[in-house]
Figure 1 (tube, rainbow, N blue to C red):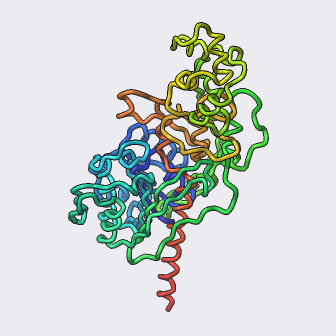
Figure 2: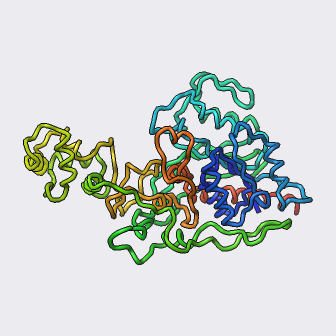
Figure 3: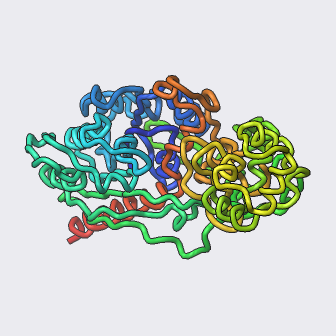
Amino acid sequence: MPYAIDLFCGAGGMSEGLLQAGFHILFSSDISEDVEKTYTHRHEQLGLYQGENTYFQRADISSLSGEQIFNAIQDLKIFTGKHIPEIDAIFGGPPCQGFSLAGRRAKNDPRNMLFREYVRIIKEIRPKYVVMENVTGFLYTKLDGFVGVTDTNYPEGSLVTHILEEELTRIGYVVLPVQVLDASEFGVPQRRRRAIFMAYRADQAPISYPSPSSGNTVTVEEAISDLIISGVKHTDLSAYQLNSLNGRTPRVLKADSSGIIFGEPLAHVGPPSNHEVSRHSKVVTQRFSLYREGENTVALTQRLMGQGVTDVLFNYPDLLMECFEAQNDYHSISALATAIEEASADISIVKLFISKKGNRYRYDRSLPATTVLTLPDDFIVPFENRIPTVRELARLQSFDDSLFFKGKRTTGGPRRKIEVPQYTQVGNAVPPLLAKAVAKQVLEALNAEKKGNASVTLS
């Protein structure tokens, strides 16, 4: 069985994909206590027990060393009296906030340095294969005054991608040109583009990136239509929904000194977990109802400015009152309603009527979702006038329903700097099905390497 290490593991999206591909995760690590609770609980569900056949360490990667990792693995009960095996692959996704296109990117953001620590661990462990995942903003990030683990001083404004390739090459790896993969092309009901780096040790068989699946993309309807809270639920479950309920990630059937054997996946039984619905005021619900499927705030503004909206007094009474009380341009509520209906209201009034936020988007049931983020407030489900639940976003990420996210559902203010609530755990995760596709490529390369060794031996 191939052995893997998962660093910056988060709630376990990458690990789920590794297990589905057939890897045994010997060691994993993340800095968050909230993440640790979700991750270790999940692994216990699957029969992966701390200190017996796997080891999770909550730590800042800068405090980890290859020696510590090797010692933790050697102390696993399954390796009692045995030498630990060579590590087949290290997977990881250093935190992406410093690289994200969603906000300003600072060349000297300390989070950008975490990938240096990732390279350091690779240098100390010397796995056969290396995979790194990050946001596409990583491709355009430049660093000043960067000194690598090889003691190389890189010029001012060096691209992170160039630094990573140089560093891995200097420590004995062949690095593939980075590729951007779209999760929706690998069975995930979400258009999520991620930069993937793959490398192999110079003495190993070459590796290649996965090719998109040939099947149809999975839509929002196929992913979450059975999770409708009110109204008519879909009784005929899609193949994707059945897989989510029945499970994709295998459980440990046997684990002892002779090795580990995986059995059937863990199915979810009972009502959906992590499916608590946010309580919206009447004003917010009425505001959500303005959006058509596949429409964002910009498109909605243009539609209302050009076409108006019908029966404002009847359909949006609370929203209309809030809008009327916030401005002084109309002498009566009915006059304001008429202006909005006839598309004669000033754009400032229309914007006030539509949203206090910059932008929102209602999912189109016939398409994959847009990228799942750590905050759900900017999205509306297609079937009801509300934001998505944690479980719905987990479905859009391709997590099994049996994986339970622990900790607070959400948090805000200063607490966001230290807490990793459920929504954030889901939004930060690597989609398991995308991780599985990448991991299977590593597995193919490992098998090719074994066949090559066998051929040499036979000759």
